[in-house]
Amino acid sequence: MTRLQKSILEVVKRSEAHLSVKEIYALVQSDFPTVAMGTIYRNLNQFAEDRLIRRVSGLGSADLFEGNLAIHNHSQCLSCGKVTDVHILGLKEFIQEQIGDETVSLDLLVNVICSDCMKKDSNFLKGTKDGK
Amino acid sequence: MTRLQKSILEVVKRSEAHLSVKEIYALVQSDFPTVAMGTIYRNLNQFAEDRLIRRVSGLGSADLFEGNLAIHNHSQCLSCGKVTDVHILGLKEFIQEQIGDETVSLDLLVNVICSDCMKKDSNFLKGTKDGK
DNA sequence: ATTTATGCAAACTATTTGCATTGCC
DNA sequence: GGCAATGCAAATAGTTTGCATAAAT
Image (cartoon, rainbow over the protein chains, first blue to last red):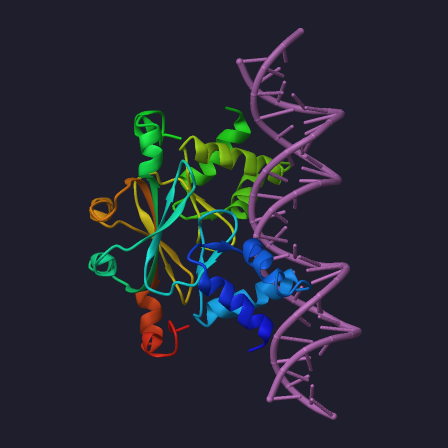
């Protein structure tokens, strides 16, 4: 593994957030000013395929990456957009019981109104549609 | 609502599949040969926002649309790619119990090896990584 | 007639890829 | 030296948008 590759991997691993490619690019640039976007993409794709990092899809138009490999899923606040890890105990078993096919993995996104936003406006869930 | 809008909506509503924008475009074209992609997108976005149809994200690089508004989620076979509706009884309650924030809605994708693919190669889950 | 929707093309965002060059064992 | 990784720029895919025209009420 090259020094650049180590740096990309470290950036994702060290962060506790869910990073966009742009954010990773910016962070890696501080050590490797000439790094190219294409290289960032190529390596992130490889790392995700090799299960060194995890790709998180479906949150916005762009994928995010995280270093946390422990099995978990995510919630996103519909009001402020904040993404949070969630651990649902027994989720796979709960679902597997009800499915004929063999479950390999799950991608669960829980759309919430987080407690902060709920405090700011307790009418969130009483308005039109889903409260947006 | 214009005749074109009715046609776009009908195409999605009448189908029992999960349609890509391209597929919807092609179907609408048979009645409105000069329809533009931009118009398809504009209307699908509006219909989804108005909850006349549902947008399904996270399955591939492109969003899909479906007319089925009953609450349900999806599974996708990692081998053949087939997308299937799944209904998990009590899922929202199961998750809500374990989450501090107020759950509004869920997007669940169950990654499976469908029974057809399992029959063709019963070693799917025994190989490297996730059997791909 | 006036408002709203449409077609078209250009713009935009996210991502991938070909290729000449560089860096590493 | 030779193979793999990188930078760069162009290409691709999906989607959005500005604007002049056309359709609907």
